[in-house]
Length: 393
Figure 1 (cartoon, one colour):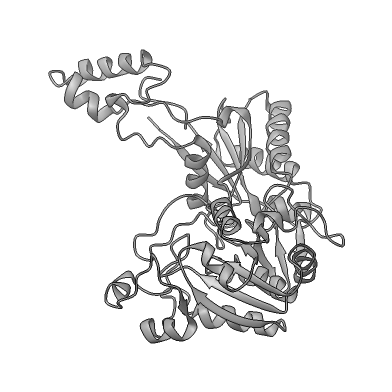
Figure 2: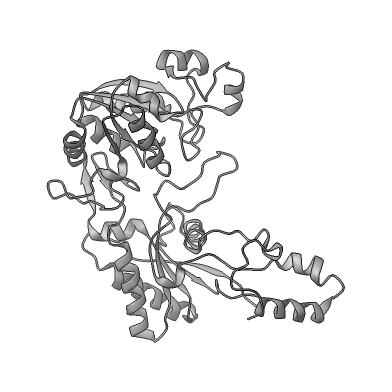
């Protein structure tokens, strides 16, 4: 009778140099033996990106960040555009950026950042007389309009916090507020776009407005600097605070690890599972209004069986429309038969309305992120079973 099962699996505390594939496979097989379940074809073994990067030793220091920023942006006045408000995700990166510049013009979007961390409540904006689509505010104008507001979850005034980090690294800090990235060129033409999912659009608009040296966070630390870690595709995007002077980067070997987990489980059990390295899920907190999505992608690496989107019919639609005159086992049989006969691509069909047309990796990764959490559960591995089953099988 069971449908989808998402099972958090405990693992040892993983350190740099550990064999992450062996640890994951051993942990999954030990859990199966201890808890009395069996692996099946199309089960999905998922591992959080954090432990993959940690095992690989993919770290960088603020000195490494500073060296790359200075080499690419010149080391004078740098515009830092649209960073997210996060002590974990951006604060240490900002230290490194400031260390590689004489002055930082920090441009924050308002009333919130890209992933929903609010500087202040939207209702306050409505009463301020400020037009968020056009107005560029200085720090003094911002304070006059909105005052000193602390984040409701962290208790941090991110405006003061980010300014203090810049100054602590020996750079001058100027804070401005705008929602169109090209506004930065009035202050400097050397710009680092720190937004995540809209970074290429921001870069394009800044260049069109006269920007000269314009880079995104995904273009910083794409190669090793003085022996540092790196990520050739995402650079500093997806990094997390490790210490006050180091960050753990997004894993650069995620695809290799996912494929090797699949191969090793097949070799030991004869069962072909799918495997995935996952980052932040895609879901919104209804109270704090915060999306996760601070990683550049949900699926950092995954096996071929996870490519694509669900192709599902809506049981409620069938029951209320096509088979409204049926009930009991006759209704169940009719729905099962319709599922077996469904088209390979239901896009645009009413029978699939409301079935969440998102990529499998985004859906499964979000499920895993909620299962593993970000605290002390100690389950960096998640086994998802029966995900590809449906009412007909």
